[in-house]
Image (cartoon, rainbow, N blue to C red; front, side, top):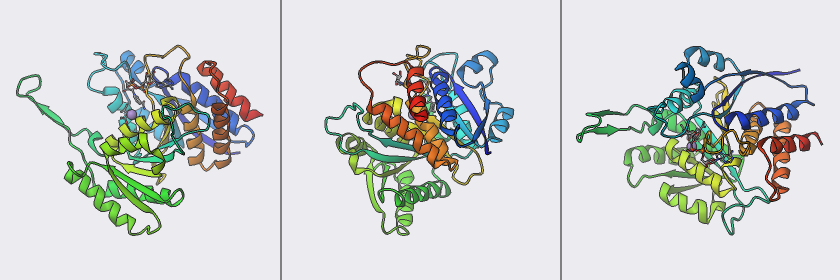
Length: 349
Ligand code: NAD
Ligand code: IPM
Ligand code: MN
């Protein structure tokens, strides 16, 4: 029987609550197929930092990298907590994992499932994927400031866009579109960010010449937020940089029934490093510890994980169980664990 080495990072806030349910579902989905998940749990996040001062040690990183895949809940404390200065958890832990493990595709599917009460009156069919670049853009952290705290302070945050980095993620987006609705929308801000936008536009045009059957569309990011609300059905595959992709996917989550349903994969398509699967949402300190979080995003992230591991049948079973759970949701409120248990029960049925 196949053994999959899985690193599990529950993290902070609602992270451990939603990951507990995701693990139940993963076990139930693979029980019949004889696949065994050999799991290692890593205690990482704001909690560990406040106790020990560690974010992600080199030893943690080496150990995590030796797994086949990673499942992550959410990390980060209460925004603005003075004990967690300078984005040390976000940068030192989450982004360090994405960068060191070369997760250059941040895959964020958005689908409006039947029965989901979304905010749009006439949503139409919503089924698109945001291919967010994961290792470059304004996230690289090579900015700086001088004369900090004085009236003459100068602060810079540079967006890094390499031909290598943009081309590989754009190629991924076109390959994905070939297998889906055959349309790629580049989202950027070429009217202002002429250098960063220019390289994206030129590479998309060049790669698109190799995919004559894939329609290409371009939107400035501000206009893209309009269409995500007024006509989300126009999108199939959106390709965009790290920061625009971050913002668009929270909006996409809200439009498709809430951030509690939005799953993601940080993918290293070359397979040189383990890919990492996590809900799009954060640690939600406002509802943490109360069993109020919806674990569906974490559970759907396990479906992406199973798919990535080639376990397509198991992945589909999880998605179907979630779809059925969503379709049957009444107004009764359930705890995080009840939602997980209900989805497990459907898998076993
Ligand atoms: P957030 O996503 O944690 O919360 C935004 C809002 O959505 C909150 O009202 C929250 O209660 C709600 N929400 C989030 N997930 C939910 C779920 N599963 N079910 C129901 N409601 C849910 O964003 P934030 O408040 O900006 O960030 C909180 C912390 O999380 C910060 O430290 C931030 O840096 C971190 N963060 C981490 C990740 C990650 O680990 N991938 C992602 C985003 C934010
Ligand atoms: C996300 C989060 C992260 C991001 C933060 C916590 C670094 O918002 O996964 O969407 O900006 O990528
Ligand atoms: Mn985000």
